[in-house]
Structure formats: C-alpha cells, structure tokens
Image 1 (cartoon, helix red, strand yellow):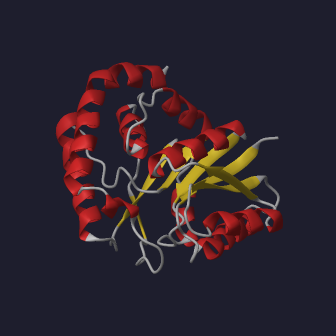
Image 2: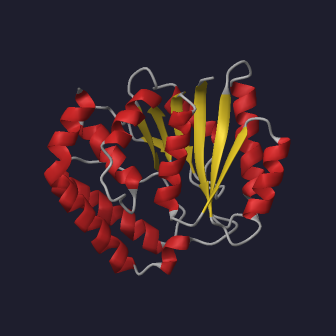
Length: 247
C-alpha cells in the first residue's frame, strides 16, 4: 500500500487539546481526499500526562490515524521518526505540523497548491504568537543561516511544511549524524541550497491555549550556542550533501 499524503505530528503533554487536533486533521484528510489513502501520524514523545491514553483510544476509533509511542527524545527526534514512518508507508507527499493547536488546516491548501512548483514548501508565521524566548531563537537562527550559508529562509524551523516523499528521502539520507537538535532547520537549508523554491508562504499562527512550551526548560543560550555550533559544523559538509541530493 502507498499513501498520497501522510501528516507527521509530534506530541508531548498535549492532553488538553490532542483530541481536538487529531479530529481536526483526520476529518480534514477525509473531506479533502475522500478517495485517496491518507493518514495522520502522531508521535507521542514520552508524554507524562494522559496524551498516550487519549491517543491509544483515538487510534481504535479513527481509521486514518497512526500512533507511535516512543521514549522522550525531544521534538526534533519525534519529527524525524515521524518522517521515517511516512517514508516507510511510501507516502507521495509528507506534511508536518504540530499538535499544540496553533495552526489551522485551512492554510494547508496554500502549500498544496504549489506542489507542482517545488518539492519542498514552507509556510512562515506572519504574525507569531509565541513567548519572547522563541521569537528570539527564530531571529537568531535566521541570522545564523544568512551569515553561515549565505541564504535567507524566513522561518526555517516552522512545523508547517509540505515535502515530496522522494525528495524527503534524499534529504533524510543526508541528515547529519548525530541527529541535530532541530533537524527541520537542516532539511530547510539543504532543500534551499539544492535549488528548491521554498516560497515562504504566510500562514495563520494562533495563541497557545493549552499545555506548556517545553523549550523554556532549556537555557536559552545553551540552545542558541548548540544550534550555532551544529550549523557551523554542517557548513563543512553541505556542498557534498547538496551534490548527493541533486544526483
């Protein structure tokens, strides 16, 4: 079996909104692609609340839902494992979003309608409703990518992206080892440097109404320094990896 589209969604301690978000996206898939194989892949990243219990219940009730329960490895690791599952399912397209109910499914079409023009399409949060710490990290990463790689990406780590499955496999084959803190940034950089038009499409970003932001548990400067070092080290390998992606 192959899938036209798989949606990858990491989840961590989202018991207050996970049912709403799952039903929103699975119903969206059923309505938009009634005659095609599609699935929502939710990766429960070792949640400590009732997220796992709710997801296991939903999986028994929702036909186009795939749940993966894993030990806590962080948001980036959950995303990577979700991508791997989507590729294992032979998905023609892979869309990634988050489970915190800050995005709207109506914006999906803005990316889907561009799929014939690029194999890697990004949204960007036109008005971002996040804590100052996250806004700072985004600006820091944008500046770092511009300085280190000589390329501008509006929102390189955004969890609202559409990727052609065959192209995603090429990107995953070139993902740095050990796995970086924020793998989506590296996928974005490799896609842009390999010649893809990312489009940077403005999308809606809502206030977070439930749950907590895990990134605030990290020291801000440690996150920034780690990401900067990873990006700087990756610069030495980039040309070789881009050639492999283009091959």
